[in-house]
Length: 413
Image 1 (tube, helix red, strand yellow):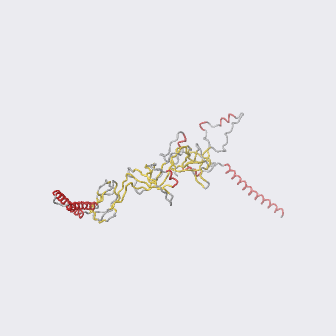
Image 2 (image 1 turned 60 degrees about the vertical axis):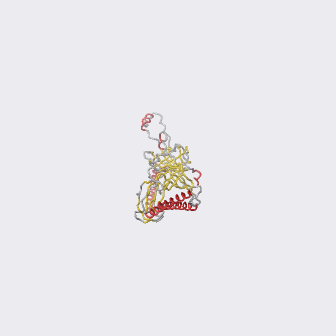
Image 3 (image 1 turned 120 degrees about the vertical axis):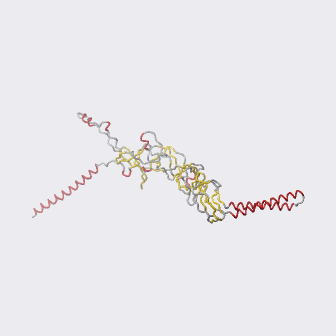
């Protein structure tokens, strides 16, 4: 009985030991496999960091208004006789836009003119009689006063008659008519809007820290998007007072609008151009990664632990080694890896960011594909597809890979 127990115990130990040993061997084999397995190379696009000329600026959002723009109204009440304009019509200065019924005023003016002529004739007779010595000075003065009063009455009635007309105070574009023929209107009734679209005003605000960098006549660019600042202008006014609530400074600029594509009331992206700075390092914003630990980029360079090329074996097997050596035309390109580098970012604009610390000229920075990277991972560079940058503000560096450099001329604050 004891012998059977011992045999069963030995068999149990062998089975359990075999299972444990197999599991340990399997875990060690898996660990060795993953430890020796190299991750596949990640395809990325890169650019070479080069010093460029950087034009800093102050970015803002402005509201457009016409340099001359009003809502037309009437000064007196009456019935509309006719409306002589249409929507979007270009009208010259002084054109009659609306005529109110003025029959009563015309009659009053005619009567006043007749009375004025009669008083002028009476004054002439009084002066003639005075020359003959048969008229007193009092009579002449009374006739002169009556003639002057009649002329004043004519002027008054003419002014009342003019109030029955609405004329264009300046040349511009008419809006949609808001009244109709035969309608009774009162003072303050809006007829339409009149806007001069040739010159536009843009009002915007900037932080108080930028107040000292603003100047009258400073160039300003405008556009409907930050990447399309095609309109040019200049600063015409700077509010001397900082808003104590918002801590912003109000600024006004003027721009030409030759094609009439900008309308009053629109929002525009505004950029105040500042003096150009040289030797600035800038990269596309797509290359910069932000994290809780700071901003960083991936720099492509040969791996730090790359093994040196093996020496050919000496002795009788030298011919075999030489035969196995790769031909020059079939030599593989040098291995590259991506390394994480923390940087200090500065101003940003036009899809680019200024790098203050962390990079040097000539560094090859990853601009796309970094979401799959980690430090020391092997990479393959493919620059056939790169992030688009503003072609207008990107100077072309001379030579080789410098054409891939992310250059910029604008910097937001």
